[in-house]
Amino acid sequence: RTVSCQIHDSTTEELLVNSRLIVTGHSLGGTIASLFTLWLLDNIKKTTRRNQLPFCITFGSPLVGDQGLQRAISEHSKWNSCFLHVAAFKDLSPGIFITSQPDPQYMPFGTYFFCSELGCNCVEDPEVVSWLLKSTITPVSAEEMGIDDYSGIVKHLKSRLIMKDNSQLGQPVTPSLRPEMILQLKAIGFEITAQQQQDNIINDLISEWERHENRKAQQMKAIDPNEKLNIVKIRMANLEWYKKDCKAKGVGYYDSYKNLYFTRDGEVTKHKKVLFDYWKKLVEDLERKPQKEGALMRETWLFAGTNYRRMVEPLDIAQYYRQTGKRDYLTYGRSRHYILLEQWQKEQTEKLAGPPNDKKKQSVAGILTEDSCFWMKVEEALISCKLLKDETSSTSEKQSAREFLNIFEQYVMDQIDNYAVSPEIFLEKSSFMKWWKDFQEIIETSRNSPLTDFMKNRRYRQYERGQF
Image (cartoon, rainbow, N blue to C red; front, side, top):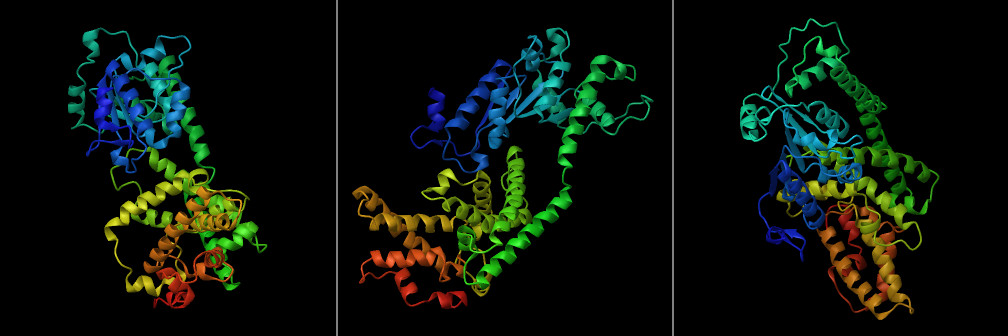
């Protein structure tokens, strides 16, 4: 309790440490380290950077929790990447709860680093980890186990990270996965001879592992990666044409999709779903893996992800607010992968922040609005105007609505000053222009602000030419 108060502020829900917190423990101390790290992850609400999350390293730790806990942690992809469990080949502790029960309920989570004097092997798949933990248990003495000498094993591995296959087994040709699996088993301590490969325990392990990997490979081959990437490019191109077509008809693609003005609007849902599924899976896969700061997504991929977010999220917002009575998209409707893409993009570009350059002004006519949640704020502003006009609204509702509109007015002007919004927002039929008309009816006629001056004098015409 005292330690947790020293490193975690329960009021602000922030970590009280400047550098990354590493939690570690050996044997039963490893289980405590895991549980403490889970407690921290559940209580830290305000951390946004991955390198600010605690990282747990255990040595020879028994398993913690059942399949329900393992599934819950795996679903929190960034939680799963915060655990690295080091397990020596002759250490009984990591697999003790699997072998000591006839029907074991304990399941692994995180990444396992199996090691021996011969080499090492990292495994993330919980099923494979369980098989290896069951198979590495042998009746040896405490001296043979050497469970207190993890420092020696790790030090030895620093100069020997790659295990080379020098075996002369003279075995017949085997399926492509089998030699690789035998090599990995040898790297973590199995002494495998040609005869032992025929023994039930070793052969069953390799066969089951091989079947498991083949099943996963078949699932991944459902769509070839290159083919899938080409499909993604085609879908984005379709949305680009849709956007241009809507603009030519005098209505932005956001409002066209929200109100289903044209027949083509229905086809957009199919493109949106393919893109959404592709990027959601890609982001989740990246989030599961422990990465160095700034290395989550290569710059070219991050650029593509940002472009996708700015193009597709407005369509999700349109679909959300198309339903009567919906509010607060950020809390109830926004997918986590949008949040991560936005966060990574901001971390990548915050050092480049500054006033808009001439190139940005010249290309403003064709840009996507930079804040992919811009239309959410427009929708909330429309609702706020409605609340102010409604005589049945309570005093607190009207006060809250007025405060939101004041903030929104300044926000819009900031976006305009930075050439960060598409000129499409000023199309006559857009939701933004509808908001402006409602807002004019509410504000005092004598009111003067940068945005009222911009709108009343139609300076958005200059804005579209990059001359504002």
